[in-house]
Length: 351
Ligand code: IPM
Ligand code: MN
Image (cartoon, rainbow, N blue to C red; front, top):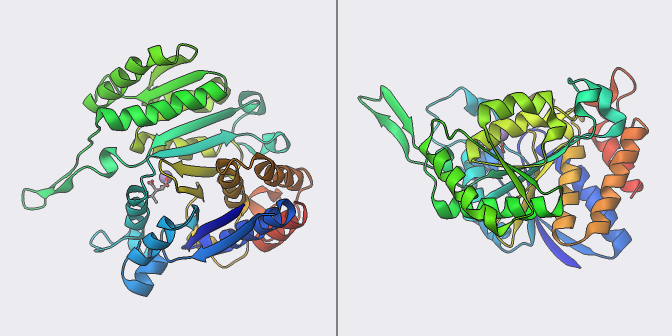
């Protein structure tokens, strides 16, 4: 297969982890006879520094004309404590999600048998955990009208959802549940929020079309609690943008390291694949960041092209590295830690 992939390394550790995912993907392409053309483009603080814009038009054109986007990380502390910054790196990511129509963010959480004791949770609680969040990504409070009034002393961020937005996300949830254990949990705050009541009534309205799927409705605060009590109870969870942002960070620590969890953002022909961790600026340039989440995001990319064997080759290499202790310092437990690049080299040579 001939593949054009836009490569958006972004900020912080982004470039380092992206390099490893490229190396591993190239090894997969060589083994299975694919031809990947990588198209680097600017995003995030790196793009603001270069051209004054976190998602420049040129980057959008490159993404639009590619088959997928592989993304590193976005964010730079120099913007975090400056509430008056006119442009922020994160705006680039939001603009890109919207411009590419990526309304469904797929965030799996699964445990690796060899890492059960690395989790902050007890082994017997997390064994068997294999769940997927489908987070709505282009609506809700992130994209509602925001502003100030009363002489700037009052601030507001509106949360708006339409039935169509909920329907298209919920359908993906039902379809995903059908390929798994046929259990779907709709996470909302319908005891308080009108948008959540729309979510609930919309999902209820779809139930008859998927009679094999058992749907549960749970409040977001209860899910936040149950997720760390009994994570293996869940399978597919659907939720709105902000709840999904928060719960997927919470879920990501179940596996033992946030540096392991990949994600896919889907909705149009062009999918975006990225690790769920951020730009981890303290580690930038030190060759210590865990590249596995980005490498596993590349696996999701191959799988999304229908190339299941290729994705499996990557997952097998990652499992083997974890079993053999070829890991960065977040997982090394005082034993020898490998560098970002060395883990990437090892994975590429084990494809
Ligand atoms: C994420 C990130 C982003 C989000 C930020 C960087 C805008 O936290 O992908 O989860 O909030 O969606
Ligand atoms: Mn987040």
